[in-house]
Amino acid sequence: MDPIFNLVRNVTQARYEAIPANVVEATKKEILDCLGVALAGSSASGVGELVELVKEWGGSKQSSVICYGLKVPAPNAAQANATMIHARDYDDGHAGALIHPGVISVAACFAVAEQKGRVSGKEFITAVTLSTDLICRLGLATKPEGSLATAGWHFTTLYGFLSAAAAAGRILGLDEDKMVNALGIAYHQCSGNMQCVCS
Image (cartoon, rainbow, N blue to C red; front, side, top):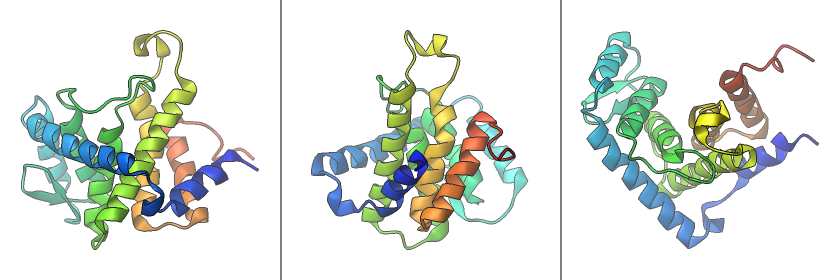
């Protein structure tokens, strides 16, 4: 069986009650950290310009852009908020995986949860935890010898597509088949592989 099915089963079936208390606490701190660094990043160079661009694009008012009093389509809010979270490079990081997990998982979960509405705190924490776990494990599994500069890949963005898809899919309550499809689309986006057109 393809390993993607085991991964998807974990993302779709994991329950809040099975998450160790120390991991729940770490996830809460990750969320607060991301909000704090987003506030600091809201005035960073280029952020205002991105927010103006997102505002110009228009669209459905689904999710909030932090600090700007603006609601835009969920993917655009996630992009703007993620940019703020990482703008000053103070966001959380996993040194072993060469990953900044919160910029992906927290930004995606906030945007999709607000779009969907009525998402419980436990479900939100579960989605952030699973998304963070996924991106860190992917980074650990492929960490190159040496430094990120010699890796040839920026792992946060490379694996961020998969992690964000898992986070959003979890919040939206996708079943296993739909989650496999979502991760397949994300896999194509993150690496431009030909699996989507080759049999």
